[in-house]
Length: 500
Image (cartoon, rainbow, N blue to C red; front, side):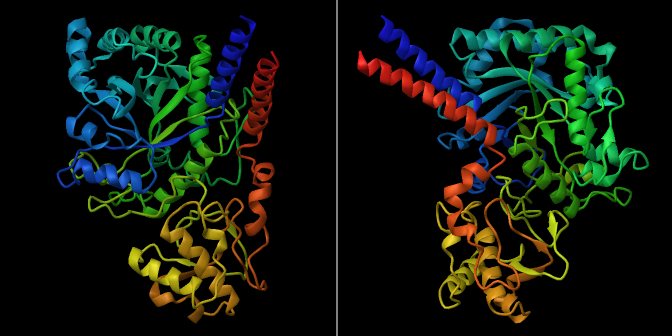
């Protein structure tokens, strides 16, 4: 009996360990308000090519669900506002919806969240009173099938659900929404579902440029904004808006509900008055956001708190109404080419021709791959640099510090720069048939150190980093300690079992 108990305890502890060390993730919203998008099958291939593991869609389209079967990509599907009345009225409608929209494709298609309604307080026909009844019926349908712990139910909101968001500590929900917010929050707390929020610092800057600095909106601020009530320091608007949600929840005594960002991003193009809607700014915002999230930075009020975020959006959508920016939030054009270079892992070098990078060194230049180079040209250039060009390309091999992100642009950048520095850092040495470009910002990241002028070989840490990466990585420091302690506990328990 004691042996069985110890086994169960050890197994439970190990599962807890895996859960607590999972970390934050970045996903992407796949909107389809366009008439020129690739087929869902091609979209699924594009998502896998770029190692995107989490995708949000706004309905339960059959073709999309089929396309993502057996891909390992986790899907968040949605119940549109137009279906709320039907699902809220009768349990049988929710049962039927689940039977037709989820069961035929699950678990081959890995559905993990269902959003019931989207930004209902912003819709012309306010259907907020229907949301919680519809959520309850969907959850009941899941419970009947034993899926309620594998598929979470929630609903998404705009920041307009708050009446105050600054300073963050004064964050408060709009009292006009109290009739549905209180039962919704009770539902989320009871079922351990996240509060889903759509956050756009871009709009805050666009609508109030005299009050909000562009650098503050882009995670680039050199100064801090102080919350006078708490003394907390904010270096970016994203954190301030997230903390406003946390404080609003705490004001209503909901302290255990996690927050999930189901939309955020920055447009790459806008109308003449939308001067901040540029590819450079979009790349800067999304790059800095990804690093901020992947590093498990948390916020000033919730340091280290896990925060999952979905970028909006996968494609530019030509049928979205409104200003020009509304049709240009995409990371990709409909032909599947990138609007700008973006590394979804938060670890690699980005397109260094923009302002989206961190380290600048006076007088020093590096050579990296052009974002306009074709995949074939990059592969040919890498083959030459690592062969006849005599570049040591060990660092971009599997399990080495510059292998991730595993794409041609990143690998080519490392090889190009090594050749460039070894051959006098001349313009000719950065040509590579037009695929190389010179930059004045250090493309190094994590333990991947790019050679610079005056060195005749890549910094040693590139070939030895693997042995010290655990101790040098701030991203995983705390979770590694927890992992070690719990793992030792599990192993000790199992050893104790073997003795008896």
